[in-house]
Length: 271
Ligand SMILES: *[C@@H]1O[C@H](CO)[C@@H](O)[C@H](O)[C@H]1NC(C)=O
Ligand SMILES: *[C@@H]1O[C@H](CO)[C@@H](O)[C@H](O)[C@H]1NC(C)=O
Ligand SMILES: *[C@@H]1O[C@H](CO)[C@@H](O)[C@H](O)[C@H]1NC(C)=O
Ligand SMILES: *[C@@H]1O[C@H](CO)[C@@H](O)[C@H](O)[C@H]1NC(C)=O
Ligand SMILES: *[C@@H]1O[C@H](CO)[C@@H](O)[C@H](O)[C@H]1NC(C)=O
Image 1 (cartoon, rainbow, N blue to C red):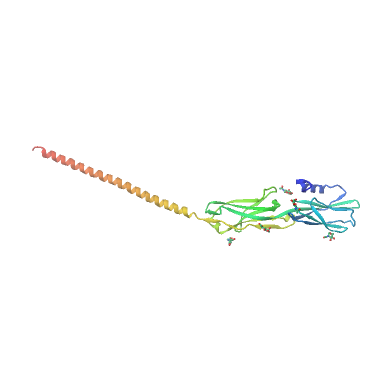
Image 2 (image 1 turned 45 degrees about the vertical axis):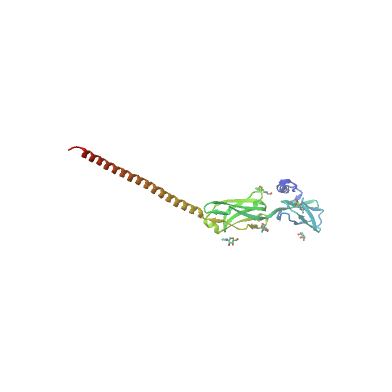
């Protein structure tokens, strides 16, 4: 734990900047150390025989080598950003040199997930990428890739919950099935005097299929509807025509009947 709690680094830097007059200011050095690793530090003094000398830190330390003008220490198990102070006093003059140790952790377990992994053309799917270990989070960038093309870039803030996650929603196109999706995690340590540490997820291929079955269904329904319509129409037409024919027949009979009655009346009439 830092002697200044969560304000460790800023408070220590402040103390360094406004330290009392007798101290000699020295430019502080920045180092990047992997989480849990050890760090060798060589504390030197300009004075041929310093009276007091040492290394100020709350981390575990041990002396590796010692000479009159320098001491090499091994600081082990570095678990958080820390400031190490090499101090020495020589003829009443105090010197304090700071080394700022920034911890980092390469991005590990970059996991990419496509949900669902099988989609129809035109429907949406979600790409999710997560990284379990990456420190410092504010230097992490996750890039969701479709083939070589970046789809989405996400950066993070200090306090973000881990695993750091990037999410992107997309619509499936026919060609999506021919490209691999992947996720790249870049930890940019340039500000800490290192390069970029990258890691990539395994590739995932989206299975895109055409809604073939739906099309067939539509065709079948259409054909059945048309047939049904034709059938119903023909039955109706048959019925209507049948009725008309019947009517005409009855009409004819009635005329014949009237004619017969007329003739009978004529015949029965005496001449
Ligand atoms: C520590 O620094 C001094 C002065 O620069 C140098 O002479 C000495 O060899 C260094 N020790 C180690 C172990 O590097
Ligand atoms: C390293 O530091 C962490 C956190 O401060 C602690 O939990 C762990 O036990 C330490 N490991 C060793 C080997 O000292
Ligand atoms: C990438 O992550 C895997 C585990 O997920 C790890 O074994 C590997 O060392 C990492 N690569 C780098 C460059 O950190
Ligand atoms: C993130 O944390 C570091 C040290 O832990 C601090 O120097 C920096 O200002 C913080 N950044 C933000 C955006 O809070
Ligand atoms: C996608 O990934 C598979 C397996 O990882 C590989 O065989 C294939 O060539 C890749 N396709 C493209 C277009 O990158």
